[in-house]
Image 1: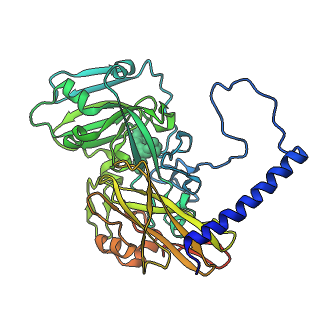
Image 2: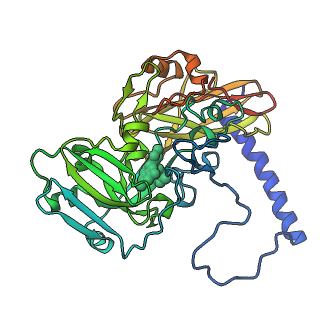
Image 3: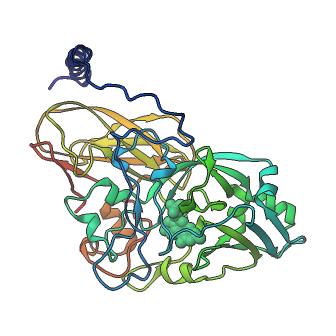
Amino acid sequence: MASNSSARRRFLKSTFAIAGLAATKQSATGQAPRAAPKDLRTYGERSRFESAGRKGSLGLWPPAAGPIRDYGIRTPLQNSVGMLTPASLHFVLSHGYDPPDIDPHEHRLLIHGMVDRPLIFTLEDLQRLPSVSRLHFLECHGNSATSGPTGALRIAPTATVQETHGLTSCSEWSGVLLSVLLREAGVQKGASWLVAEGSDRIKHTKSIPLNKAMEDVLVAYGQNGEPLRPEQGYPLRLVVPGWQGISNVKWLRRIKVVDEPYMAMMESTRYPSVRPDGKSRWFESEMGPKSVITRPSGGQKLPGPGFYEITGLAWSGGGAIRRVEVSSDGGRTWKDARLQGPVASKAHTRFGLDWNWDGSEVVLQSRCTDEKGVVQPTIAEVAKIWGVKMDYFQMTSTIDIGNFNAIQPWKITRDGGVHNALL
Ligand SMILES: Nc1nc2c(c(=O)[nH]1)N[C@H]1C(S)=C(S)[C@@H](COP(=O)(O)O)O[C@H]1N2
Ligand SMILES: [Mo]
């Protein structure tokens, strides 16, 4: 088999030859006429040739009767490049409701409870305080869950990476560290938790331990250089780095400092991941190391044998990604992938590996290791952790295994088709 570098040279040579031809032809025939210059657009749009889009529905919880709708609006990871998700393609998970229409001038954030000085902040107040900008992923704890009411969508051989992993995105979040606000309010002795509340119809509420709040939690008003999008919590949200999506309370309006978790509706009924034996994992908040190959991925088609970069994303709630390995022989041997910068803590990290496809049937998969040395598990290892048999992952049950971070295999068939090979 030719080495990757000679395969790549051959590939580049033929591509350049074709590119040269196309350029000549285009200028000769006057193709691709330029549109007359338009006025400067106040707010830019992408090229009309681009169509990558989110998919899914807000969904209701508990699911309404009728046909199963996918839960959540998913990011098209198969089209992603680099490590940032444009705000327009960020996944959306709101528990059944459209974003409230909040006038930022009217909006207030109240901090009260076990504090010396209850405080009320306007958005302008917050923007006068020292700001930080941090790269962090968000991930719904139900991302890639195979069981649960919509799990069948995740194990179908035809599933795309948008369907299997699209409930995660990565942004640069700007705002004020929550620790700054809490110090300003003066947290009283004995306080150990806080309860954060949103302004949506269900008043989404989540308990967060005080030590996490003081460590790296952000009260964010900015996303990728502009104000948050309404779907992401405009004008204010919590960003709880590396923790389950549910903690990142959107449309944030109240933080109460308390001395125990509140067992609010969402965290007590839906979010302890309940095991089939009836035990549940409460406040299992940190997301484990996870990676997925985004190209080639489910539903794509390789035009023929030759050189390809295998590329994907890796992330961990435990910190920065240290290593990503890729296997092209179903997990027998592994090669270290390149990590593309920036490699930020609790952020998506892009990886790549040169690969020469010889046209035979292969299974591609990636596994990552985070800075704590924790390695992404196989699905058999996940089954062991949860005390379930492998067939559990095929069942359509009302409960799903949360924080599911098993290695994702993609099978490439001889015709170049790419198929989900998780089960
Ligand atoms: N106020 C409010 N905050 C919320 C939710 C919600 O329904 N209401 N959903 C939570 C869940 S379950 C997730 S996964 C994340 C998703 O954030 P995103 O929609 O910006 O991607 O928001 C969390 N914050
Ligand atoms: Mo979520």
